[in-house]
Image (cartoon, rainbow, N blue to C red; front, side):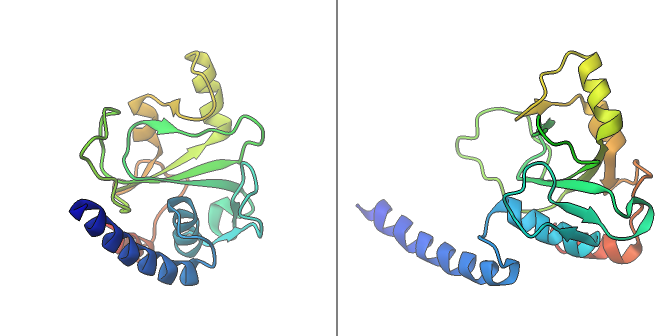
Length: 176
């Protein structure tokens, strides 16, 4: 009984914080909506009006990727897994992740909402590589480590398709 009382009090606190975040996002406080909001502000992405749009969350509005479509993902841990659409492919996947972790039991572990890594995948390049390896494309698509390494734009600037300004770098650091 005591654990349930404690849990109910913590959930009340969490709901109050979620409500405050919802006001900022103008969408429900979920990890996905949070990632889309942060990405839109840092990377100048115009989000689609409908949050339920399949495969494409928005479009880059400036720089070398101006006009390119993007699907934004935010994962609490970096487990080398990416949800890839089988219906509508964006030009890019922009992926925020927390700390690197093996895909093992989550019992007793947390998935904090922090940004430790950011990756940018060019789908025109990615999909043929996945097919050449015989990878099943869809939800929880397993990507080899070298693909993540090549796509990294933060904290290491390995992928040169999207270069971070010092201001963007500072903004990302707020979410570590």
